[in-house]
Image (cartoon, rainbow, N blue to C red; front, side):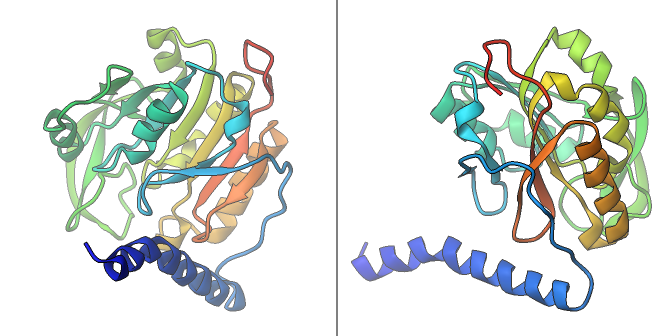
Length: 252
């Protein structure tokens, strides 16, 4: 491979970032986005691909900690990076048939990665999910404009149930990309803020699931419940928070 080709490949993430920043400026100018004040400024690190990556605070991670990743889809680059760089044990959750097929066909998954074929929901049992209109992740939200009206019953569990089933006293990283259903999880997240080291949430106002106002309300609800905002992505969709308590070994 020539040096010019290598340089072009390495520039793709940077170009993508610039494009995202330009689009966000456009949304800010037209009132479709807002700026957020950070409550904390830890050292930050981005893990994963351009599509599937997230920003964390690496200095507060415990060696051999626990991460929960709700919404697997077809990209576990973030999960694998947590395992490779920090020795984190990752539990991935996704009931979508495509996600189950993706994980089943994945070769050489690390022993620290554990997949659970159910989602995060408002009850323990089954809920109706709506199929992607073309490709992507299933959604509990019927009004999601990127989903068809065709429903399928899939398994879900509530956050307290999963904590009990897995016997997890403290979650170092909880990532939530659940296609619009995140708005209904705010009370549960606040209730367990003392048991979550870092919370990563994708809000889906940009695709019409909810108005921007509702995302702002949820961010403020998390803040009032003890979470501290330290990062917002260039798309203003992915939010990173520190939890309200210390990990078992004293890290904040």
